[in-house]
Length: 333
Ligand code: PBG
Image 1 (tube, helix red, strand yellow):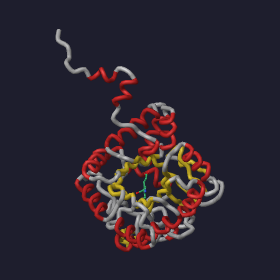
Image 2 (image 1 turned 60 degrees about the horizontal axis):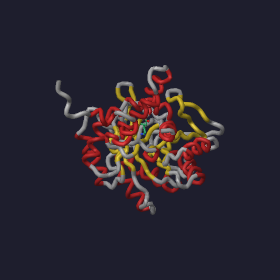
Image 3 (image 1 turned 30 degrees about the horizontal axis):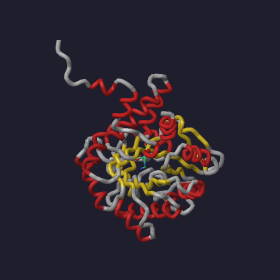
Image 4 (image 1 turned 180 degrees about the vertical axis):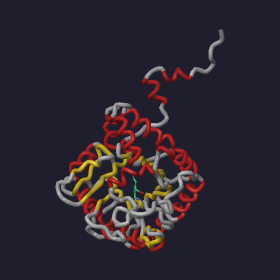
């Protein structure tokens, strides 16, 4: 009888040894909690496809932010549901827009809590696209082209208004070509040279955003986002997207969604030296919640395994609707 020469199980035999040799550790400092802010008063409405995630009006927002700050989560990502929408998304870049007002309040309550502003037009345009559209009718259907260069100016205005309100980081998610450069230039001209850009560099045209579009009321009213968001089948294109963002001055890169794209997270980690963000999106959250509510999976174990997997793939920062839960679980570890 011969014995194995190498015994991997030696390092797995107790929690003490396993903890000592663990390669990846998820920390509260890695997490970003998204928040949906809306107009009105006394609003705290649960998003039906995202149990545990709510719309908050400005007067109910503090309880949520108190909880996030108390847990030690370092940053929030703001999405706004405005009172009115138009073809160019004006409510996204006015000084008293919902995101701008929420930013001012949060920075007043918690100056050290980082406010990340999502810079896009889809929540603020009546057609639901992420830029300005040129619409026309053909065969009785409305069609539209999202106009790239015309949209850049509006996006730059949005970013500047968010920075003026006190946003610490600008996170453009619109996927127009040249958006990092346009936003960087506008921020610099207005005296915001110090504000970093967290670019949604590699954002796929994904069905995993479904619940978010209910939450943010931002579904495109015609067509889809495939002319600006990436084809899920592509990987070399992800390198080209990330490379152009680096050249345009992005400070952080992002891959979105996360779970079905961990190969892309690893690729970007290996190819670029900027901090890397993985966005664990709404559909990924909803799937876990649905299965957990049925009692089919162990929610805590599944969530921690998923988030650890994102970090292991190379993410430094994880945006997730599970941030509050994960922070609690990490504290009790
Ligand atoms: C705005 C934006 C979207 C998400 C973040 N920013 C939606 C989209 O592109 O349709 C999705 C986030 C999520 O699903 O959690 N463009």
